[in-house]
Length: 84
View 1 (cartoon, rainbow, N blue to C red):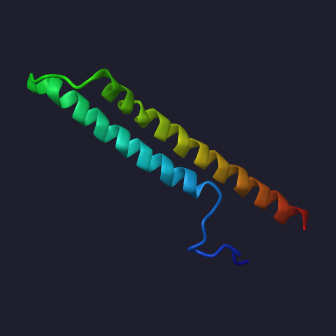
View 2 (cartoon, helix red, strand yellow; view 1 turned 90 degrees about the horizontal axis):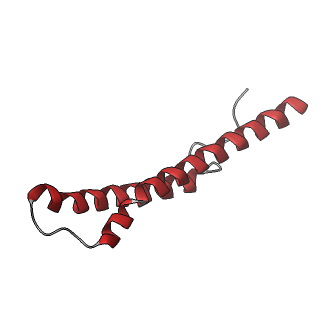
């Protein structure tokens, strides 16, 4: 039996996963920028830059929420197809 989902359709949670990946990579870049002066012996950045590094964790949580949403949607579909 063929799946009715189109290959290019957005599944539940896809936007959260994409947003989480973007936020994670912004946080990773902020971490590299923040740590570089410490390794090079130059003047460190202000404290708020260390806060931007926390975006890595926020992005990871967003992506994880998207994955859980996708799993929940898949289970709902599976239960719906078994009922028929």
